[in-house]
Amino acid sequence: MSAARVGVVTFPGTLDDQDAARAVHLVGAQAVPLWHADHDLKGVDAVFLPGGFSYGDYLRCGAISRFAPIMEELVPAAGAGLPVIGTCNGFQILCEAHLLPGALTRNASLHYVCRDQRVRIEQTATAWTNAFDQGQEIVLPVKHGEGRYVASDETLAALEAGGHVVVRYVGGNPNGSLNDIAGIRNEAGNVVGLMPHPEHAVEELVGAPSTDGLGFFTSILKNLVDA
View 1 (cartoon, rainbow, N blue to C red):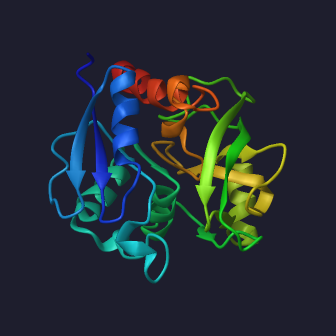
View 2: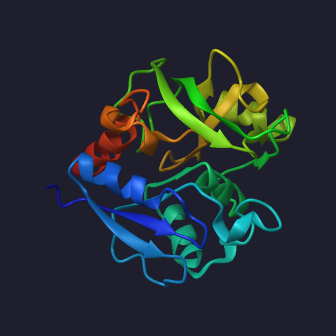
View 3: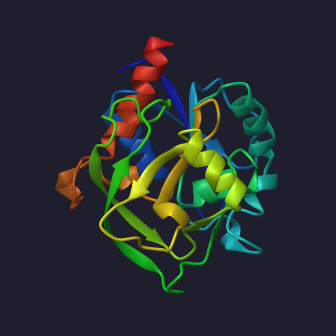
């Protein structure tokens, strides 16, 4: 097993922490549990913010999680270069914490969406997507009611011009996200947020549509080994 240690944060209401930890284990890294009330990142090399309904999604999705003690440690660490990924509710938290621009709002259909979704990898120059090929299309599950990515015209233009759109929906947009955006990165490329769930596409044995999600986990392992 690699010496790489990936912290997996659990908030009250988090659902996918064990799935994320399992995916980390499958690529040979060590998953380190991080509790929302912790003031210590335990020296991890990267952090995964999983999906679910943190704090019951009261106020707005991710709005309360932003103020959790663990985020007081995570925000400056991410600013200093710590690789961080957030999926679904984790993406919402990253936007609420201003580690990523824009916001996730109610699906355009106003219905919860749960399906396998084809997406295209638009950017491989990140800590979490370097194992993919530019333009590669993969299939990942989506399951959310508030996944519509929105941002100002200026922010959208900056994201597109800077190559900060990491993942884009193809073959249908499940939530009405502007520019078909499924995931974005920060300027440095160490922070990535996406609505699809790579941690649910790592083992065909449990009914995953593919094992395409493993690429996000092999990417961070490669990034840490090469660092």
